[in-house]
Image 1 (cartoon, rainbow, N blue to C red):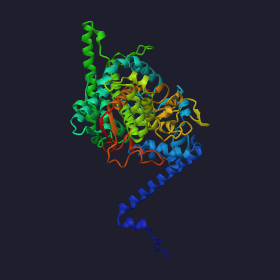
Image 2 (image 1 turned 135 degrees about the vertical axis):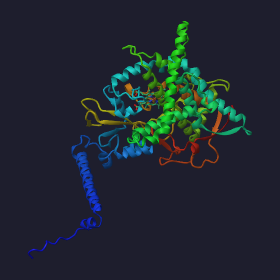
Image 3 (image 1 turned 120 degrees about the vertical axis):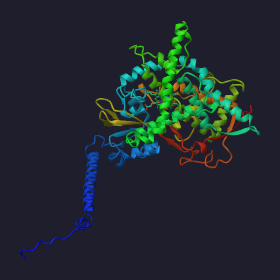
Image 4 (image 1 turned 45 degrees about the vertical axis):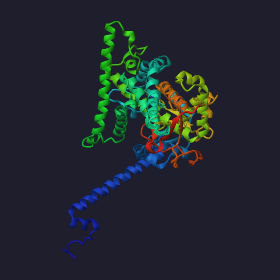
Length: 536
Ligand code: HEM
């Protein structure tokens, strides 16, 4: 058929292009894009199963090929769930992200964190406040050691003893002031309180007073500014790090309200440092320098590394103060909140703790830290067991494997691999803990070995420097409230209680949420308590 144009069958694409030319172009772009995605997935699968140095380590398919699952769980506030569910399936070591493993055996964790060449991962940089590193954000091990030597002495018992009056007044003192007030206003001598809020405010009170350098009395004046500033700062930092686009225009507008509160906290701390320097300067002029106040603000101004004689500049002091407000408030308060909650679910342990306190001290006696250490082993065990069962920082602490790599559970882990320390899994490990999901403080009595296996304050060179301060606060608050008040769950509680059991057959704990700290998901619903004056 000479001279006749060759016939061509029209594809659906051609038809679409005739009707709507751009449609055809869009489809081609979509097709190219889909092919690209497919190629990426194929590459990731091939890499994960044939090339990755982590290919011999157990782990789920999804964890090996994408980090998105981790990001989604982080945004939902249940990262510890991810670590827990996978460890039940895969054991002590597993791939948690394409380039990262999780380890959960307490022995492995101690060996790994005990290695001085293990460094923190870059994630910690989100905890820098003004672009300057603080204790927690330092990834450089040498730098961190200097900072630990600078601030360490101020968290030792000798210095903490100087802070005891503040700790007692702002902690148990402010809780008692509030609870006694509401009880005296009550017609029948009992009243419902929210113990989570009250403990949280007491904790902010302590840390705020130690950092600002003057008392803030959150509970007594019901001024929640500090609590809001801190809460906002944690949320702000969390979201900024999880959603990388947020700090960029136009999304940055969404952060504005948070940013403004964060800036207020930051400014207030700048002013506190300047004010204190001026005040101490005046004391020095009068030859009264020995009258310097004892608190964390002064501690950081004075801090000096005994080896290098290096001191902190204004910005570094500011960074440490901001950090202490975050690291030293929620952690301590929520550990105590979990302890009270657990005692309410296990009445036998509550009765034993009350009996111990009331047999040792009269109602009029205010129980101090050394009283607790000498006379209240069971109360101490109640807190230890809370630290174990719900480690408040029980997410996944990221570290980087050392130069030359390391061997964990027989697997070679190359250098620079991201290693997540899985605290919650370690604290529930069945080889180390019998009936690991039961709240049983008795396991710590006359058993030093058990105490060493609780890894909630971390381990090694980067262990928590504030742990003794935390103990000081938690013991004095718990011992004194057990002595002074009778506590019980509200009568309308049907969703929680000693007889409402979880999948392990133990009293079900309230729902938790975790961004940085594991805290009650519904404190207004789950942290109610009926209190009355103690009947001795
Ligand atoms: C029950 C209360 C507390 C718990 C369970 C706790 C737990 C921890 C844990 C697990 C770490 C290591 C975090 C990591 O490596 O990712 C840590 C670090 C830290 N904690 Fe605590 N902490 C508590 C209270 C405090 C208090 C009261 C302060 C100070 C006022 C404090 C200050 C710090 C600091 C500065 C670090 C960073 C250490 C470093 O990275 O070298 N903590 N804490």
